Length: 224
Image 1 (tube, one colour):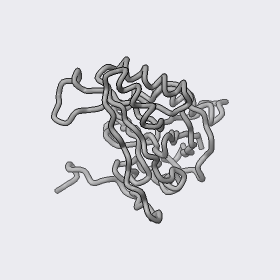
Image 2 (cartoon, rainbow, N blue to C red):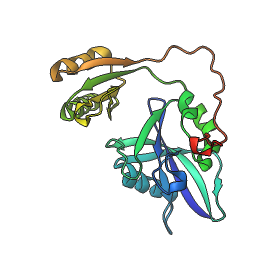
Image 3 (cartoon, one colour):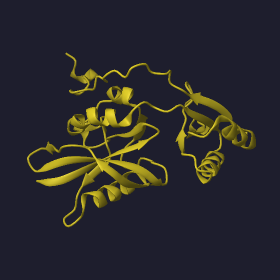
């Protein structure tokens, strides 16, 4: 069996999911990014290479999830936990990426080979951390703020925001999502003329099992 590797890229107790555009039969469904291991290539090296090609960022493997899942008769999928080392994930072979908490894993329509890994992945993610969102209208300002936070030892990622009801891409701002304290982020917001928003999920009581998808979501085109 030939090997295929998938990356569970985790940050702030959230995992990155990527939406496929090809082939047509899986377009619009979600996967953990990755690809085939080439002859003579180590699985970890293949995963780092595939993520760089698909998302334009550098990751390192920290652990492997249990088991392997067949893909057809000739390939089998393994999934690794990876962390971001350099750059920000930007889709090149997908049309969208999302950061999902363990409670959001069921919100997207996963490809079948990824589904058996979701239960262990949910357990490994744990509860999401409260994050701060600093929103800027200029991409340069957002990336400058993120670099400053990273330089000071905080995790910071830049994502594109979309204003509800807006169609003009020029009006869509940029957000810096970070685990930095509010007073640190507020200084950057004042400097770069942005504003502060808070992504803070309600405190959880005893953790309950997450109901994860085992079958594809039904599509409108499948309806009678």
